[in-house]
Image (tube, rainbow, N blue to C red; front, side, top):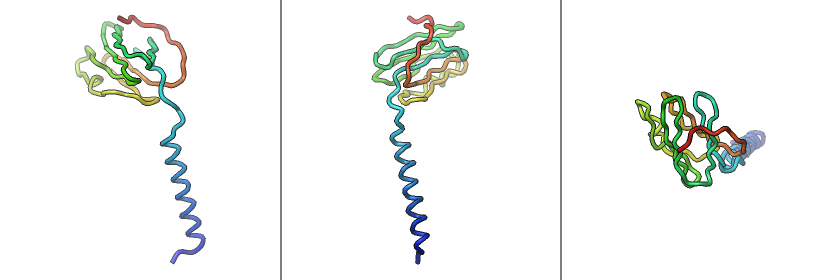
Amino acid sequence: MFKKGDIVLIAAIAALALIIGAAMFFDGGGQPEEAIVSVGGKQVKTLPLDTDVSYTICENGHTNVIEVRSGKVRMVSADCPDGLCVGQGWIDSEGQTLVCLPNRVTVTLRTNSETAPDAVVY
């Protein structure tokens, strides 16, 4: 039913699919080490993920509370009108981002370490 060339082609496609699947599963990026907090596109704080703590960010007359626990991050509360950022839940993977659009706050997880200036933190 199948010719020799068909079998080779099917085997090559299957091998390629396995390689791509393994690359996606083992992304090699490692666990994120820090959360980068930005307000209005400006980086204001770097939060280490190895310490369980809550941070209150006060910028531009708005307040957002960010919680770091067990290497994960979430927006606990925000004074924005819709509260969608609070409903996003926990993030824990490299490149994931929490967004509070009305308050212009983003929190992005990353692996490599660079320092960012501190914001007003309580």
